[in-house]
Image (cartoon, rainbow, N blue to C red; front, top):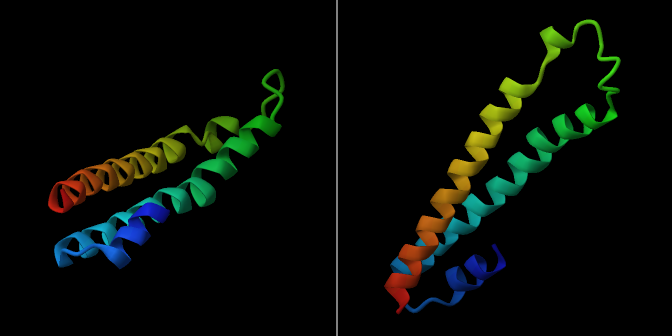
Length: 92
């Protein structure tokens, strides 16, 4: 993410600057999704005793929610990677 910001500021090619800026935003979005969506679910699950799950666990089962946000996070990361590859191609 830091490298994307540096390229966005210093790249000699305008398209490279714009694309690097977009990649920086995508990378920041990956972190944001991780911290605000996936990590809280992971912490909650770690706090549970697997032998004594809450009686309403079936209703509160977070796997679908976690999976949805993990897919969002993965898509953002893949888009950032592809954008970085394209940016590198523009700058080489």
